[in-house]
Amino acid sequence: MSLRLGEIGQIAITVGDIDRATEFYREVLGLEHLFSAPPKMAFFNCGGIRLMLGEVEGDSGQHASILYYRVPDIEEAFEALSERGAVFEGEPHVVHRTEDSELWLAFLRDSEDNLLALMSEVSTLDSV
Image (cartoon, rainbow, N blue to C red):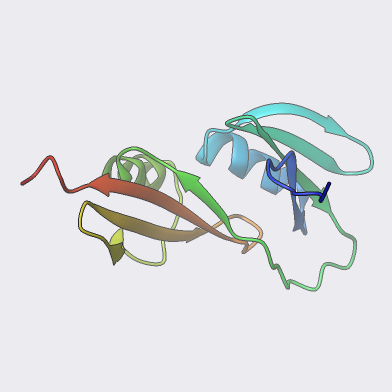
């Protein structure tokens, strides 16, 4: 029997300031804060997947993970997060089209300069 990985249980993001990052993820993005734990970690619920923020002393500022948050209406989410203080790198835009759908993305950075994205897959069958 060959092992096949599937479901993601937790994603970790390195941050330079755990308090600032915890506030951003809780207040700006509106994620459910599950708990904080020593040394300098905070955990959030992302639709059943746990997100762990971990402060690293002497953070180099190099961050590798990109989280894509699936939203039903990207324009509405873009507007709501902008009103809460999120700064986007551009407007929501189509990155891929098929015969029956469009994939929309909008990129933003968190308080620690990690790249995040809103993602919305929109059916084009309803508009035909």
